[in-house]
Length: 224
Image 1 (cartoon, helix red, strand yellow):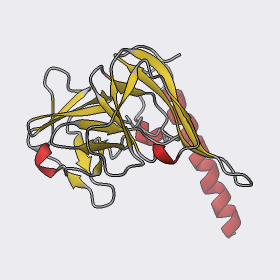
Image 2 (cartoon, one colour):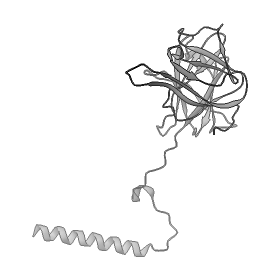
Image 3 (cartoon, one colour):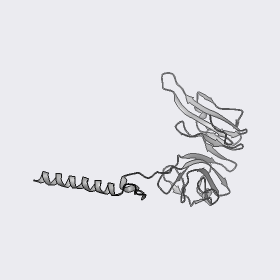
Image 4 (cartoon, rainbow, N blue to C red):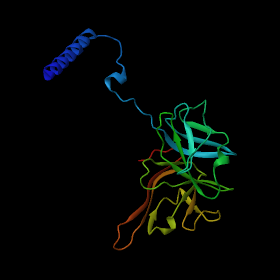
């Protein structure tokens, strides 16, 4: 009897669904996404670069939604007071006093979080009294690195590499500015260009360790 009752209830649900479906056929009323199990699209922010003007931190990228926040710190993250640029709200964020929370002479991370909880990839930076430098991301970073002529690029641990190549026509090494370690090499962008920066550590009998395998785009040229 219990099985029969369950079967009858199941058949009544199917019949009700068929009746409802036929009654809505051709209707212009849109389906409620939650009722049909469609997962809302999550807009993922992309951080392209950051710079300082005094203490004003300006972050550029893509897919920034209203209320997006700049975060700094790798483990204990600090949420900076952030606003969307009214002229380009989806591509530029401003933390008016963000520079007060960024350390000197050591690496620090920046990321962007949209109100839907989605984060951009981290980018690390190095700040000195005389320069601001992007730290070249590791080999798993999925996007080209975007720079402009005059920008600084620091490459941590490059002095340990057994093989590396870039484009000396576009990047020139800087020797007279301080970096955290003698193994960290500082470069400045001197010309526009598109190239790949690669570095590895290879030891006999051990797997090759790839330090960097990045596309670098200067002045917005498309990476081929």
